[in-house]
Image (cartoon, rainbow, N blue to C red; front, side):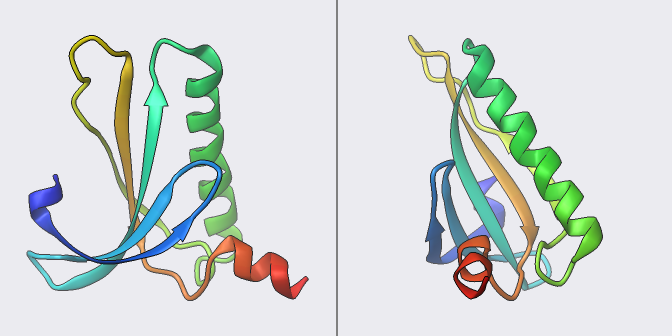
Length: 105
């Protein structure tokens, strides 16, 4: 998947993952990619991933200009000897992130 994007810069890091600004190579569209590391053998780790996606979908319906629409969720390969996988969530690039909104509140 990562050969379809050019990573431009890191734009955020939080409790659940890292977000980078990227450009989709096929159409030159700017996107944000959130990278999470998820333990697929751990129920709570999977529940956290599902909650992250549900919250994002809920917020993007109410304010798509602030919480951009999800475009794609891609699972990385599971490394030998581990139950962890990389999860990449590709979304439209928003105007700000959650921490910026909380700072203004």
